[in-house]
Image (cartoon, rainbow, N blue to C red; front, top):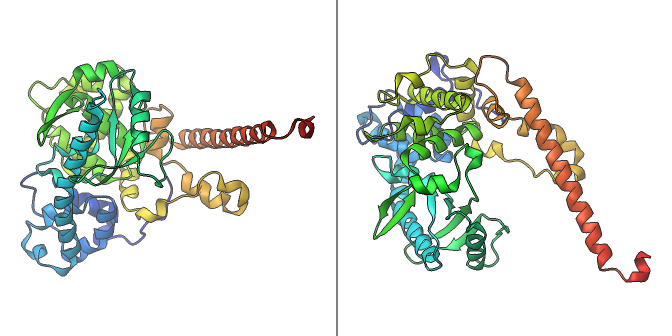
Length: 393
């Protein structure tokens, strides 16, 4: 994804991306390392940290550094930390409400990312989340979709296939449910296999099903790649999960049988070590990588210094009516090297990513145009069906 960068580097030539990485290193731990930057430097990246969901993590480190604790530049981080702590209680209420509502119909959600990732942080509220990502038992996706559609809030922009916005009861809040039919897009196995390997953890008085540690670590790493690594919070998820692997963790299940995907994962784990100081001593030597392609780390750091609002894009459907925006929108949609490699099924080598980027953008344009034409044909056919017979003869 291409967007406008914050151009001014910090002293010593380090970019804002490096500063973000510095602030977040080890921030998921109960006793994170002390910060070695001053309040002015922290203030420069505070908007990036806040908009990416990492304000709580930043304060978890800043609050342990004497000269930053009372600095006026950190006031917003401190306020966000307190807000996230309050939100965490409501988030758990939403999870319980959703589980109870689905259980009344014999359905059980399998929750991943977001709340499930937060359980690997020393303090779960350090990891905020927006929507609740779920799957349900194999063969019951349509049933779950219809159930959620019946309980959406009237007047809210709910699409047929979601996400679905629900009122999650007095202990929860308005919550957005993202119902997935499967997790193939993250190169995970079938739902039957995922459910068989899944586990349950406590959420208040309810037991909530989540992915196995092996499958979930694979998913969060693949999710980071799929979206071009643009949120540092996603690499914190990877780091937190790497540092909480149990003694019986099966690395072969996590890495899988495809050597290409295994190399992708190894690169993400090494990136978490280099940028965030993740401890990967438990990783078998066979899955270590000694070198990373230059473009991989550079892309992640560049993405971390992109202001969130600059990522906003106009829908493809606007292009036909406003052709003058095409150049700027093509630039906004230009895939970054990480996402282009992932979505093209490429190798994480040292060669240029340009061919992957061109292939991905070309396929996206063809799909958008095709969808637009199909919608137009369907609309015309629908209007013709409602015309009197003599009008269409």
